[in-house]
Image (cartoon, rainbow, N blue to C red; front, side, top):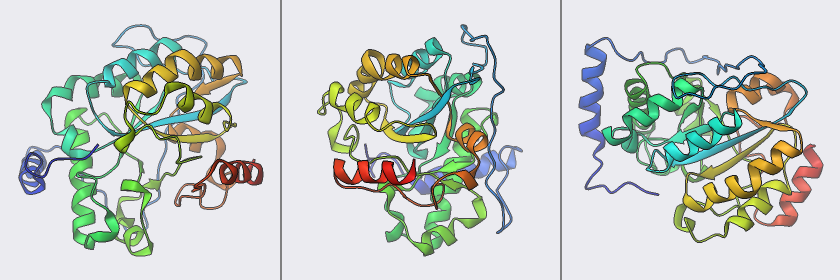
Length: 288
């Protein structure tokens, strides 16, 4: 999904976010050497059932996987929240600031945060960062973080980010260094449930690509689309549960596994970028 430039104006939102600062809202991240932070929910044998309770994921003796969803929020978010609540699991939403600014989603965003879901920064407008100046990159990230904090009443802890279309370089990472984000990639990028593929890729194909490559510590880039929701409901989540997995946030994966135990540059580069199923399989074998 992309933002219509006629409907989503970054300068207008910058003025809006300045008001937030004047009211004592969000704090700017500082410090060029800032380190990414992560939080993890403690294991529990109980699962929250009501909309006001935090979901405590039972991770004892379980393999962990992080399912992440780009380009939201959208009208399907509440259904995703209900599904993950049903299983007593967490997920991470990589959101676009231009959509977070839409008050239509304010209550859903707050409900997601209150339940223990994670929000991460996916830019404001989904512009390709390698095409932007350093100050524009910083505006995209800062404005989105401010809007996340406003929508969640400062309850969200934004420690992760993902590049629009996964395109970056050393200049981009250096421009964003002061935010201290963990830059998150994905096990595979060929699932085809987002961008121009919404509702076109069969749910069975989405499920197959996830389940054939899953392993303890895997992180998947998905999208909150109807076909993906069907794949999760009908195949993916039941199969993961049967295989002894628990779904957690990216931060919880990093906290549990430790960055030093993940593949080289897993948290700051797109280590698993692959164009074919054969390349994905080779990467999985290499890094397991």
